[in-house]
Amino acid sequence: MAEQPVNLDPFWMPYTANRSFKKRPRLIKSATRYHYQTLDGREVLDSFSGLWTTGLGHCHPHIVQAVQQQVATLDYATGFQVSHEGPFRLAEKLIEKAPEGFSQVFFTNSGSEAADTAMKIALGYHRSKGDSTRLKFIGRQRGYHGTNFGGMSIGGIPANRTMFGNSLLPNVFHLQATHQPEFSAFSKGQPSKGAELADELEMMVQFHRPENIAAVMIEPVAGSGGVVIPPIGYLEKIREICTRHDILLIFDEVITAFGRIGDYFGAQRFNVIPDIITVAKGLTNGVIPMGGVLVKSEIYDAFMQGPESMVEFFHGYTYSGHPVAAAAGLASMEVYERDAPFQTARQLEGDFENSLHGVADAKNVTDVRNFGLMGAIDIAPRPDAPGARGFEVHEKCFAAGLMVRHSADTLQFSPFLTSTPEHFEETFDTVKKIINELD
Image (cartoon, rainbow, N blue to C red; front, side, top):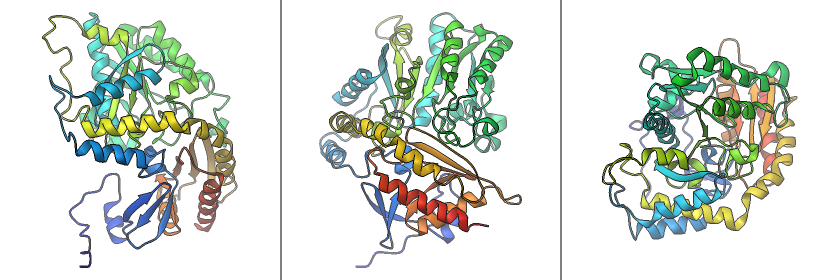
C-alpha cells in the first residue's frame, strides 16, 4: 500500500516560518550517522549535528540498542518518592566527569527546564542561608537559556522577548554581549580584546547591591545568539566578581557540554568553574529529551535541613530521570568514554577553522568566528528585508544536499565530533557558492 500524503496543516512548527515551510516543505525520513535522508530519497549532509545535539552521529547503534532494551524492560517509573537505578547511575557518571566540587544532579526534560530549575535552586539556596533579599538575576544580551519564562527572562535574544515582554520576570538585568566586530571581526578562537566588558558586572552589582543578587547566568560560548565567544580573560573576571560578592555563577552548558568545545564541560576547557551547570542536548546525544542541573555540594547541603521526611525542594517534573532517557544518557556517556570523541574533536578544530574562514571573502560576508567545533558566518542583511539572505542560504543549501542552520542573517555551524576534513570542505564550498549567488 502506498504511503498517504502528509497533511502539513495541523502541526504548528517551533521556530519556523510555518507558511513558507508548508509551501516548500523540507521533510526528513531517516538519518544515518552524518546524513539525513529526505522523503524524496535525497541525502543531506547535516552541518549542525541535529540542533547542537547529536555530536556522536545520528542513530548511534550503542545508544539505539540501550533505548530499545530499556523501553521493553521499564518504560516509566515515577521519580516522586520512588525511583529506579537509571538516574542514580547517570548522575554518578556525570559527577565523575564534572569539575571538582560538584556533587549532585537534578534531572529535567530539556535545557529550558534546566535553566528555570537552576534559577529556582539559586533562589532556594540563598533563602536557606537566610539571604532572603537575593532575588535579582543577571543575564547577558544575546544569551539563550530556553523558552520557559525564567529562561526567556534571563536570556537576551530580542525576538524571544518581544511578544512576551510585559509578562517576563522582574528583577532581571543584562550585561552587554561580548561580540565586538569593530575590534574582533574574523577572529579565530577567543578574541584578544574585550575582557574589560566584564567590568560592567561589577558596576551592575554595585548599583543593585550585592546582597540583592542571587546569580549570574551565562553561556561559556553563546550558541543560539550567534556563536558569541568570550574574549581572553572575560570569564575569569566574571568568576572573580561573583566569588567576591557571594553571587552564584551559573554556566548554561546545554550547548558547550559533551565535547562541543573539546571537553566534557566548557568550564574545563576555559578552566573557569561555576557553581551550577545546566546540561541537555549531548547528554543523550539528542536521542531522548533530557536535561540536568549540576550543583556543588554546599548548594545541595543548604537544602538538606529540617525533618528527614520533609520534601526539601518543591520542584520537579513527571519525567525527571525518565528510565528511557537515563538509558540513553548512560549509553552516550559510555561512548564518550570508550571512543574518545572529544579528543578527535580537538584535533579537528584547525581543519574546521580553516574551512570556515575560507568563506570570509564571499560576497556580503561581514564576520566569521569560531571556537571549538562552533562557528558562525554573518551576512550583511538586505536593507529592506533583514533575515532574508540567511533564510535563502538555508533553503538553497538544503536543496543542494546540505543542512545549514540560520538565525536571521547569521549562519551557525556545529559539526559532528567525529567529522572529517572532507565534511568541512563539502560544507563550506557549498555555503560559499550559494552566498555568492545571492543578490
